[in-house]
Amino acid sequence: MAPTSQRRPRLVAAGVAALSVVVSLLAAPGVAAAPDVAAADVAAGVAAAPSGPTSADAQAAACGDGADAVVTGSQSSGFTTTYRGRTVYQGQYYINAIWEGIGALTPGRTSQEKVSVMASAWIGNNTVDLPSNTAFEVCGTMDTGNVSGRGAVQAVGVRNVSIPYLNMTGAPYFGMRFADVHGLHLGQINLRMSGGLGIRFERDLPGSTDVRMDNVYVSGTGNHGVETWNVDGLRIGTVTARNVAYAGLLLNNTRNATIGTVDGENVATGTGYATFRMANTNGPGITVDRVRSRGGGRGVFCVSNSRGARINTVDLANNGNNSILIENCSDITIAGGTVNGGGEVRLAARTEFPNNRNINITLRVDNTSVRESPCGENVTWNLSGNGPRNIC
Image (tube, rainbow, N blue to C red; front, side, top):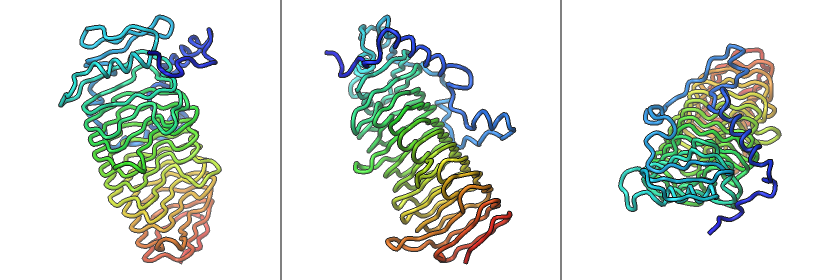
């Protein structure tokens, strides 16, 4: 049976050629890999951001190595799926080839088996659901349709799932969607979107534990880049966000997280979101090595009774909204770094949550102001730079 919406109206004769161009661009040097910093920063002499915790198993194997099931082919020639050398699918539908690869894995397995998608095409308005004990990677480029409330790739209510590599384009509802997943590893994730939300951990489903992300590059979303809800035990190397409509990395009700670098350019422009945001009783146990933000909306934003977070250093410049806003948070430390231009550094409070308390901020602030209103409880400022100050 044919999958839903398998042909886009716009994918006529020239469509395959256009997709080939996209794939070629994604494979070009400096494009396929998710960079830790923008090429312009490298040219300007900015050191690459520390990658933070990484996964040795993702680094050890190239995409496609050790696969049990392999999807090859193209839209013009058709697709073939093999499982340990045996052909399990031959046909015209990319999504069916992927489904058959997952379906060919050993039923009831207690350790991971792997599906490697070497081919590039459009999956239609469909979803790839990953069961427990599955490794799934897209070494080509998966172009996506849109299924309301669902991810193009998702894992819900499962254990021991890994996605070592993924290249994705399109405007799905969610690029990747997770909930109630325990033991999840995302390796080198490259989301070059034209809408939708990049990676989402659901709010209204059971939470997840033991989640790792090595390096996520996300651009062009109409919503957040990466958004977590209800995660206990999170390790991230780098999130690089470019031209993302809302937050680059947003942590909601997430605790015990260690994050290397959050790097945003033109993130959350004209909104109240930020390159890095914590909200909805997020924390405690949050450590972030570095937040870098250029332009866009806010740089760093903590709100709605979030608590227990330390950011070792920030590098914020020309953010269009607050460079930093801490509003109704507690036990928050920004241990160093710089703010240059853009919106003010602000401590604020609303009446529906407790006031800020136990806030420690060490910063050089130039060409923008610092304001604390209302006064928080046990707030320590260690400031340098030429920024005007109105603090308690």
